[in-house]
Length: 439
Image (cartoon, rainbow, N blue to C red; front, side):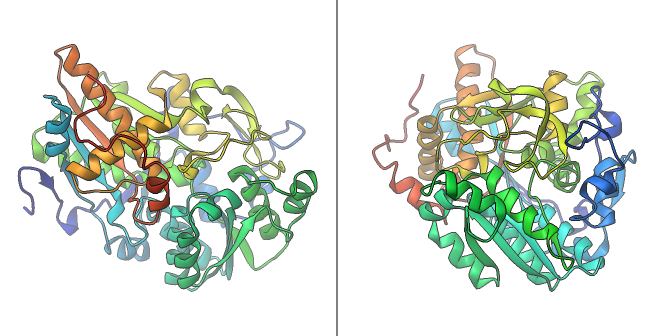
């Protein structure tokens, strides 16, 4: 077994062969998607013009297990299974007795967890005879992952990247261009939604909601083009469940039972991927707390309202049951651009309503403080988004230490920050000493 005391790596034949669909197991069922008039037409009528039939079926499936197609498994073999690592030096820096593990999704070709759904979506679109994909992009991880997946399955791709994100991190555009993607700053003059936003504010920094509108608008205008979404939707959460399935096996090997499972939250994909395979255990009485770390500047789950809302600013998507700050909400520019989304996955929203997932708002200063602490002790530079999960993990470990109740905490390192170093440069005034900031 390729493992040591602090690194638990599954053999290749232990890569999950099925995705876990939580929809039929949720205690609070996800409501149907609706159109602008509040009616519930067939799902094909709502999203069939931009998604292939297999993804539409996964979006509403009542089947718990979905076999992973061989071409997707073949692509997964490039990086899966990913290691579960005990952050022993981080524990020592924090001076805590709790055991902290992180699931390292940064080892994928794109450097993040987004590849788990990118290759699946690209495969199904290729199977449907689609030639082009459009998508939105915040920080750059999703655009990079889909650019790789599109190339793998012989598809062209156009990425609408939030203008503020592109200005902060032009290296992301470089790598996407290198992979064959066409990258445009959003808002752009190419689409109706982009032109309308620029007419209101010529200096608009853009948002994920607007970039989604632009990508969907273009996909709807071309018969050879479909749209791909990197988070929120049920089929995206489904594909990410390889994360939690592997974590379950790895913790068993390590002889551990988790007390806390933690991930950052933007739309819900890596959080759902981690907690969905553990949800039936919690419903059966196992004591595990699921924590969602979201930025205090975009507190969708902690301050948003639950109800039906659109997934994009131009209101081109179906209306979905979710926690939302409002489709028109324009979050301030932060370096964790992948977390700047007004809404939340219907699945995650259901888990929050059922009090199975507990959301926590985390300050950017704390996220970067603990990111620097991890870099200096574990020698891993977290993506700014992942830093929110890391910060919440460290804060919880310190809280448990103060209460003299150490536990086992697992968080998802959803991506590395090696293409996001400008975020660290802009936060260079933060404390860089290795002792923990808080007692």
